[in-house]
Length: 128
Image (cartoon, rainbow, N blue to C red):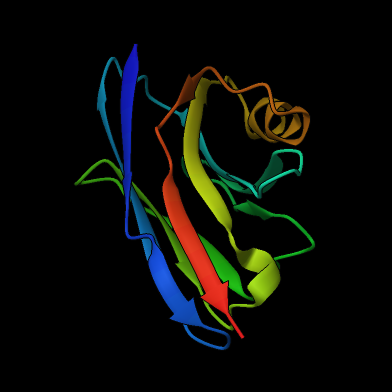
């Protein structure tokens, strides 16, 4: 199993920036598929971004151009740089992972929400 621990959430005014981190440990396979999701109160969980090691990252249309996912392989950490934040970005943000053989398998699973490991979440609150 994989242990995921998010950090970096907080409160910020609209237009500001935050950078979330997700530290992974445990039984981490090579070519691991990792992703960010978010869920606002009363709303369904939404996929934000995903990365399959060594491939071009995927980002949802709602955050494309504003949110930038990245990885620090040496530290086994997933990041989400969030810029130009809007009130509608307010949500609990979750790190997730699964074992995938190819980028297509990873991103298809991400779009379907079929992740295998989940972190506990970090809250992001954006005020007007």
